[in-house]
Amino acid sequence: MDTFFDRGTVLPVIFALGLSMVVSFALTPLVKRLAYKIKAVDIPKDQRRMHDHPIPRLGGLAIFIAFVVSALLFADVNGQLRGMLLGSCIIVALGIVDDSHPLGPGIKFIIQIVAALIAVWHGVLIEAIASPIPFGPEYWDFGVLSVPITVIWIVAVTNSVNLIDGLDGLADGVSAIAALTMLIIALLIDDLEMAVLCAALVGGCMGFIPYNRNPAKIFMGDTGATFLGYMLATVSVMGLFKLYAMISFVVPFIILGFPIFDTTSAFTRRILKGQNPMKPDRSHTHHKLIDMGMNQKQAVATLYLVAGILGLCAVMIVTSGYVKVILSVAALVGTAYTVARIARYPHEHHHPHPDQTAPEEGDPPAKKEET
View 1 (cartoon, rainbow, N blue to C red):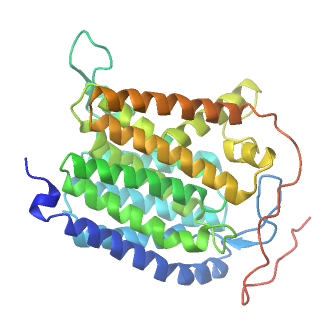
View 2 (cartoon, rainbow, N blue to C red):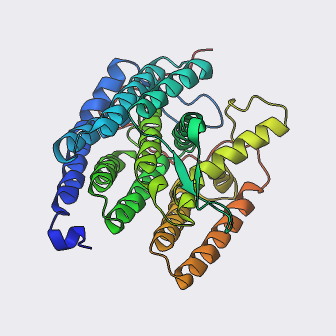
């Protein structure tokens, strides 16, 4: 079978990535000004915050616009993509409102389900997966359960990425690594449409990271984190869940392993303590790394490494071969052990390490929190 490289059709992928990166980088300063105008500013008011002065959020709007422009130019706008784009518009609109005037978790959850259903209505659906057991039917057909299963997946991943957005550049970088992993897999399985969409996501994240890395000048906010989660979830449904290999159904779970693990452990911890699972706290994996003595740059680099190892494992699994599978399993076990050790680290109540610098020249002065 010919590959992208044989046919030269990898060019749209390169152009999609490049254009998205340029647009995201160019728009972020404009979005920053807009964030101040609509009061979409994060003011540190509790110990969960890792910054010590007001920082604008809403940066995800630049990533969203960059992705849409790139996708419309280089991807085939079919029914599935239309559904994904329409759903993402709802997610981004919700994020903009939430970043400027925080909403309750209930209304956000309902709107996220609506956005997921729109994608499902347009054909973004997990209809079947390869059987995870060696006997019985080769594939599991979900039938009428396809809709709720897909909605749960999309909403869960959307919120998982949002929940890891606690350190400068963390959610953006982890999403970029996940999208890059999906891009490589798309090239390997000769799926041009998936490759272009993943490239547009990677480019949008890369264009934003210079402003978002520590010390951050702007946050992506719920606008960006939920958008990236929504797109990673829907793109994985379009491509990864349709891989016809015995263990391919685990690939999207491995690629998104860190945000899924962090969210699952956070919800489990809160439920066992009798708390509202949606109530935020300061016991996420990135908080544990800070408690262990790391600064923000070190903690983010550590979690980038975890995400990168998981991505490498996913790629090796798709390329098959017993040796690659064994190496993947070994790497997965090592990564899971490392993250589990971090998650069990005792929670310490202390003020966060001040990694942030003073506001940029020209930014509004820090406002004191009203009491």
